[in-house]
Amino acid sequence: MLTYAANRILMMIPTLLGVAVLVFFLLRIMPGDIVELKLKADGAAVSEETLNAERTRLGLNKPMAAQLVDWLTGLATLNFGMSMWTGDPVSHEVAIRLELSIEVAILAALIAVVIALPLGTLAALFKNTWVDYTIRVIAFAGLATPSFWLGMLMILTLLALFEWAPPITFTHFYEDPLANLTQLIWPALAIGYRYSAMVTRMTRSTLLEVLQEDYIRTARSKGVYEWLIVVRHAMRNALLPVVTVVGLEFAFLIGGLVVTEQVFNLNGIGKLFVEASTRGDYTMVQALVMLVAAFFIVVNFTVDMLYAVLDPRIRYR
Amino acid sequence: MSAVSLDAAPGRARRRHPALLFLKTQPLGTFGLAVIVLMTVAALIPQIIAPYDPETVDFASMLTAPSLAHPLGTDAFGRDVLTRVIYGARTALGLGFLSSLIGSVIGAVLGVAAAYFRGTFDLVVQGITDIFLSFPIIILALVVVSVLGKGESLGIHWNLVAAIAVPIAPNVARVVRAAALAIREMPYIDAARAAGYSHRRIIFRHMLPNIMAPWLIMFTAFIAQAILLEASLSFLGLGISEPTASWGVMLSGHAADFYSEAPWMILFPGLAISLAVFAFNLFGDSLRDWLDPRLKI
Image (cartoon, rainbow over all chains, first blue to last red; front, side, top):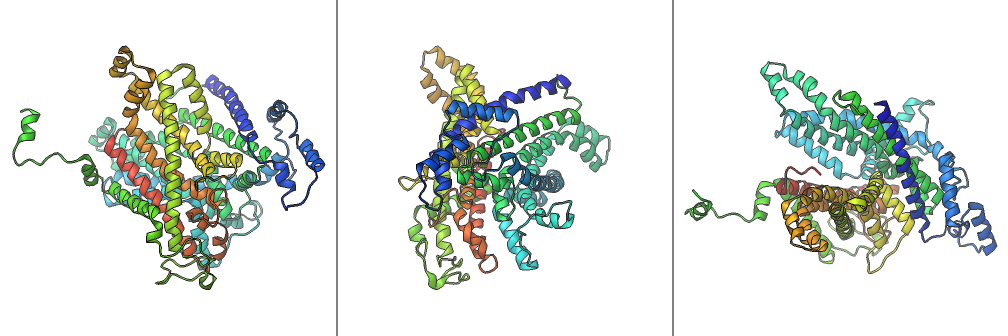
């Protein structure tokens, strides 16, 4: 088990290296020139010397190979370079925004699981009744509703009912937990709806499969209470695929954050990503892509390890 | 009794056309299909259906509430929301169909080739798809957008199509590869190889037709994803831009400034996105149940 874990951790290195090289080359074929974009933003006349000086400062006129070596050695020492737009270190720009995004993601995950497990179970237990149909339609609608539009509808409703508009500044949880939660619960709900839809569908379908098993029939014939069968026999065995979906979707939450943060005026990782892509800020985009990839790999690893804890039949060697 | 005499038995209903069977056994899928047909019509002939021009600014009727003249109201430039929703269908369905088609075809070719040739080629394809699959599709699309910028020719935003197709291809490649690996071991492929057919003929004539079922399901499902992605990118200002009618554009920028004055500006484009994605998902799901219920995609 321990050797397996160690091997898996070692295996992450080539994957991350692959991502790093791929991202580097993808961004270097970009047609726009960040320096011109930045300095000539307001149509100002800028001399060629100024442009070249800026290119030297950003390391853009070094040969491609040297830039790649810089990037990779930087990664190895966790130095992501400076943002080409603001001039501050990338790690700083990310750090000041990370707390907010992680908090929204965790809230969204909690909301999703709390909604999805009971709904998915109910749908499976009342298969092909109106309960099942209603829950499935709710879940299907969750997959179809864009989270940013859901967010806009929430703001619309909150404005009409309570004259509440999303605040411009972020309140930290340790400063004022209530203000923090009232600010972040809405984006978390907007993203969590789609998330919960995925988990609901997975819970329903795996539970339906498990309920067909022989040991469930045995338990029934022994006269075990139906709720006990569901909780003790069925749920525990249906949990594994559900954990996979929860994990995978959690790793992908940044996708929802990218658009939803915009709606709620939240200055998080998602908004940073959008701004960096719009401005062609390579260093920022490549660092953020690395962050997303690393996060995905770590979450995947955690889910795999969780399997062994949840299911005693699984023993990695 | 043989099958022949059954068919010939008098008074027995003739075998239905499979398409009719779909309509009969998949009511939800039929609903999805109906919505898709309706939206396709809107996308093909918006100039006949829509009451106004989608881009003409009319300051005399800015932000008017829904009325008989403007059933869904007007926006901040006095443009009719209904008209723009109808023209938006052209953008959404056109881009969605095109990018899903391109992505799915590239994915299918890569997947089948990887499964057929195995070896190094398979490993390379798998390695690359694995890297791409560790990103949410919108992140990949954003990277492609920031690499390519915006570009348009023949009235189609090719860079946007690429941004949407790139994340679709590896997803399709993975599923198609798995399906093709199973087919590769079938006796008829051995027979084709023994008969001395070329690789190309085996791949295109023998393998591709047999992975059509999962491919078609994925293609439909990814049209839904592509519509969602186009709306999201346009909303962020990285896809379609004003004044072109697109559901994402209608929700972006100034729409949010009029939350309390003109909620219809936000309500209807979003409903259109949800309905379109809902319809394609529903249709794709029913298509799977109908073609091959054992498939897990």
